[in-house]
Image 1 (cartoon, rainbow, N blue to C red):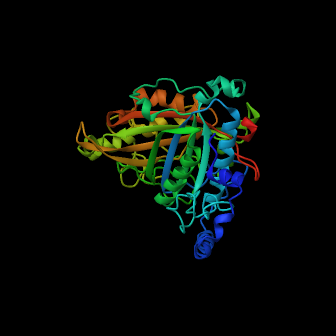
Image 2: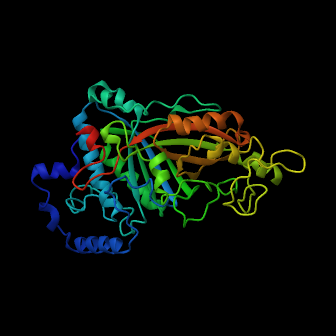
Image 3: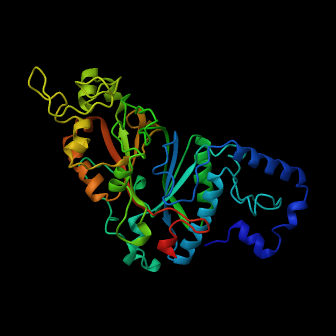
Length: 412
């Protein structure tokens, strides 16, 4: 791995030499701005039993990136994760990258790119994961540490995947309540990793499409429908233990989870021409209240056994809410943390390039996400309005201890 500026300066013995070169006023402003940012609050602890960004109350903004490893050296990968962990802990606390040793040398580039300088942490969380391909690299010697659950996702009904928007060796999920803060986080990690990893793809997201704690109001997706009403809530410890946290398999995955991402293009123009009744029957819920059809409150149980005057089910057989419900899937649930996105215009169609960047955490992707999507991909009335164009799976290890680094139990 190429030497970082911090290590390069230290090895040359000039790390502190340039501090006095006209930098006095800068240092005072630098320290004051960092103190103001930290005091502004909104900091989510980076260290803990589980990685932040899973059970954390879902924030408003996302920058997700997948990287390909450019080395066969386990030592270089280990060093990358050490440096990424240090930087993540600094940024989530509202500090600049390189607070302890960098950003003050006038004759070299600063360690931090600076666009979040003075901003509060904005509930920033940074979550790391490892893709299946990482374990196929013979030089890393990780094949025997690969969990059985970490297999490439199979081809699923309705997939129209773009390989340039799928997969990856390592993922970074940055979530916060400020778009500049999440962009800054991924930009700095990409900069630190240059020469060791290459960004394969990334996705900016806005407008969360689920709630992960009971006090959060259910948001709306780009179809204008309330989304994620029945999502697992972090306060439900039993459901989190049963469906999200890993407690078996390799020791390095204990306390972790499996992240599935899907880039789902939404055909907004087609949806916008559909009658309100069709929209509601497609989802199985009232557009404005979010209540199940035939009910009044958003959180009323789905009346899956009820029929209308015409003898047909109140919730249509192909309605998304029915097909995705735990009652129809042997009780299976997943923890959703998705976001809306828009990436300009699809020039071939002259339509908005927009949709849902779906993220879900679970303890067994084969028995949870894959099983659900196989059913949805065949029967869901929503398929008329969506297209799955990107897909990835990552193993997210358990939390990081102070002084350690993400993935230490795997790479150490």
